[in-house]
Image 1 (cartoon, helix red, strand yellow):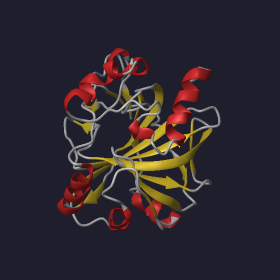
Image 2: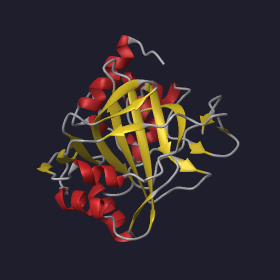
Image 3: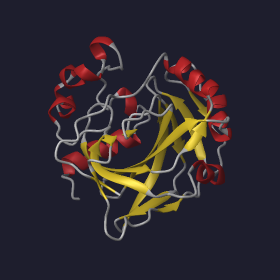
Length: 253
């Protein structure tokens, strides 16, 4: 999938910005009221894809849109070797920036891990089900193409890595703190079985740029209700975009 230089530049700028989810062009947006998702496309002309795009994220991954490939999807080659650098409350999510050197390989292309962040409840659905929490691991290639690995969290025991991140997160938007999450712990964050669903989509926040490879892991992690409640308290509510029409897309498995 080849992106135009303009789109690639926009996507890269969004990923590299520590205020990615506050908008790369400064327009204020949110998850409720006039600034909520249903109005993102009208808040700024640069957000036109939020209302006009045909391949928007998130989606409901249901059996009627899944296509099982004959030989299965190629495995994602994970190489998470660097520790997290900092935790940022950017007002819309808790974002963990990662030191350079970690990556995945997809379609023979290396995508460098830049950051991961969280949404509650989950943005994507599986068979119509929302999960209490979803993490997005955001990667960018040399050409500025994006690949997002999504991990769902089920209700369960306390998640030790989530605890380390939550212990560092500020309840004040715009504040940054050191992290101390090792590469090994980041790898352990992911399930052992990394089978995934794949579809073409977009950023789930303004400007909703399309051309994003979405790789949604089929297996889940766990989080307890107290951890979800703490995140929601810091975010002052939910921070998920509603499900978008699948249109003509299929989800590969």
